Picture 1: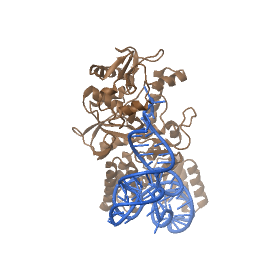
Picture 2 (picture 1 turned 135 degrees about the horizontal axis):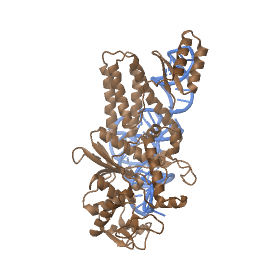
Picture 3 (picture 1 turned 30 degrees about the horizontal axis):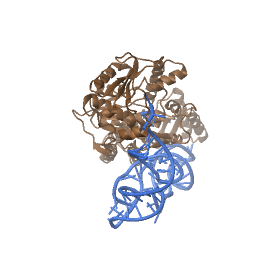
Picture 4 (picture 1 turned 135 degrees about the vertical axis):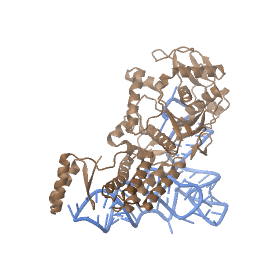
Length: 464
RNA sequence: GGCGACGUAGCCAAGAGGUAAGGCAGGGGACUGCAAAUCCCUUAUUCCCCGGUUCGAGUCCGGGCGUCGCCUCCA
């Protein structure tokens, strides 16, 4: 398996350091608002990375942090007249709900910044002791000039940064490029006691502290949105490596951003594409399929109508699974069709090849559609059960690596009334009373039950 | 000014030296009592433009044009 490493800007083979284990850390949400579709892109992508690595035999320890103390939270809380930590808790819960609806598998650890103040203090201590950080007023700053490799991830040079003068100067900083490890609390702000006075952690330090707590000094894979490369990830490297001398991250993965086409995203205008709202209209699987139909390192322009396209195409995948599942009920018990099984094997091999190549979900998705076509084309009523199961298991297995087609694909159960209506329609059809038959079909359709007449008899599915 | 990404059919999007995947939408047909589902055909002589390298270039190189991200705690 090869992956594009932002650090080296090259493709590299993923190898575990020991026992097939991989430690993976992804920057989670800052919980000051509901997550939007762009956030979801990152989370869905790394959820798939994690699933796929497991499928390929790695034992993945997956850590995602929740930033529950941060300037934006404080600002937002002030604006809403709410306690910052309460607001953070509220949006943390909302995030967890959205995550479930999106089918994100739970991380191995989901640490919150506010629960790791002790680890953060310890890390800051070490940085001060080693001469990489200085106390100034109630603030503690990381001295970027002391870390020779500063800029290795983003390609930014310290001189350019300072010369560019877009970094905020601060009265207690030695250099504008220095960044906060610990920020003194202003009146009314939430704070924790510390040796340097009451305050709160800087934004970057929590990730270093928590990543190292759960994954050790070296993290195998660290992911996040491309917008975090600088300064966030650059600073994580500086803090962590200055503290330990060990390589902090072996493979850096960054997803390109999702751009909102047309109107600019503006929270005050209320036209942000919040996942929570999209979920009212589309299932989590639809959103996943949409997000995964582009490669993670390509920018993606969000066109809301594309979710309709994704919904229609997801239905195609389900229909292929329904087809197999329906045939199974009428299929011969004996025998097997090796040729069909090897077609399924072929798709698994090609799917794996695509995913092995830097997680090319776009190509993988394309293969699922091709496989669906072949299923309809080649799998008929004569195919024995064993083969049907093999093909269905393969097809569903691949889909589920992407977290789609996870719902039951058997015939949905029916109410007594629905049974009765279908029975009456069959009788009507038997006597060629098409008017009655069509009327019943339309009535059931209105209730969301779609009838389909096949050579093997009627089958039904529920419309979403 | 510095770092970086992208520009492929009406829309979305793979492909990265060997002759344009896939999905949606549109058109035509097959199957069906009619549908639905499904299948087949059809929609890019061509991949933003101009040069160059090559037997051969969306694919490599150079130069434009355009869009976007980061460089002020946004995934």
